[in-house]
Image (cartoon, rainbow, N blue to C red):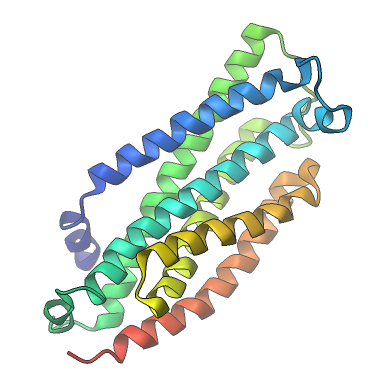
Length: 236
């Protein structure tokens, strides 16, 4: 816990929080736009059903969240891991009289906690705003399979965890290249690939999200082990 507090104090999270607010604003605008797509004169008939159901809207918003916050997670992880252990000040960090794996664990837990929290808050706020706008505009959407009061908090947390582990996997790829851009690009690619899984059954969005999250977390544990061993073997 002390290590997490130390990492929190020396990291400028104000900038990342502002970035999270920017992501929230962008997704909110997209979410409201989704409500009116079925009413566009030349909307494709096959694509309309996705925007006429709450499950479809929730799926699109959750995908936007985990891809966007996955990139933000990669940015933060790159700063805390690649920037410190692969930069000019690496010798200073490597000389700390603390187990390197414990420091790495603290960094990753801090990233996961921050990303999961802001993702949850953003997803909940966006869906609440979209719901209010739909009532004001009189948009008629098909009721969800699972009540929104249950599915939204669950998906907010699950997509936050998914974003976090995507960032950790991506920074491992970037670490191999000692490249921050490589980590960020990897996060975008991984996010886009995982997004395809949600098209399997958007009507069962909660089940699909939980399944994708479980598989990704399991894979990330293996990848994280590689990252930890690599950093532990670094020489001053």
